[in-house]
Length: 392
Ligand SMILES: *Cc1c(COP(=O)(O)O)cnc(C)c1O
Image (cartoon, rainbow, N blue to C red):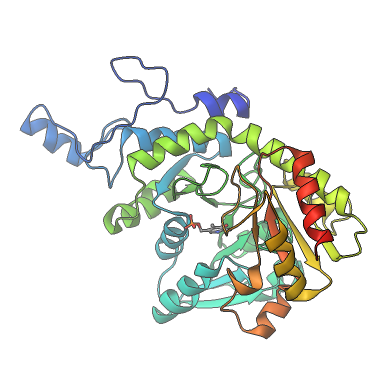
């Protein structure tokens, strides 16, 4: 298995077959497991073997298939699947630091992360410093000898800035800090996060891994030491584990993920090109395009430009709303990585609660829209987006 290429791993990695030798992965929809004898139960509680289970909150065969397949894809020693992306991030942060520790985080984060960092960890006596993630000198200044963990999204939402994983990891490791990367926008396809120095990689599996908008899930990838020694005790005792049904959806999602993401990224690039110089737009942002300010970094760090483009409409919020309302194929919602194209107006939805000055400093202008490109026909998407811009 270790010499398989990614696409083969995504289809066959981590498979566990029952006595029926089924082709498609089975859903082991069971919370418990029967022991043949009292002695066998005692032995399993003393030491649980790699393919032995006690209780679905601790582990389950279908969930293990998902974890093994993801670990093989990411090039990680081990993985733990969680009930959502936020359960994954909460697990890593809660298990990774203690009272009195210091965290350095990029200031552009998925909204719920501020709650964990500022409210939950803040109340427990953890200090958090925020930096502009693309400013390597700022990381250097902020990371201190007592910094235990650094946390950032490798591609920020919704302005699609790319953070240099290797450069931040070098600085963090010199201080002995754990490097935690939320890699959702980069997608797990061809991820090089661990090779570039990330100690822990987290994904909201809700996004490209499911890829069809059905289930909520997350995954944490890292060393065996971190996953089994540090993280698993926290996750299994606090209840954020993934359900076997969800794991089955995710395993089947992984089979087609590379094909979907490749098609989505190709469409995103075509749309970005079709929109260059459009008079209704102040800015077209797509990491895969040569015009992106960090394009050389994108080429070394990511397998493709991702599946999301952001547009800044010259006419502000009124123009953005008119654009959203004129779209015929692209639906208005807030997921991403889905087979269906989805448009979001961050300033009034996902980032609504941020104060205006913070929105401005994060580049979340009234005219900014984020489009997650789906797997529909590229020409239809280009026509839909150009048509809606004409209506602005
Ligand atoms: C969606 C998302 C999350 C949270 O994941 P859920 O599955 O919704 O809990 C975290 N980080 C990023 C970058 C996301 O896009």
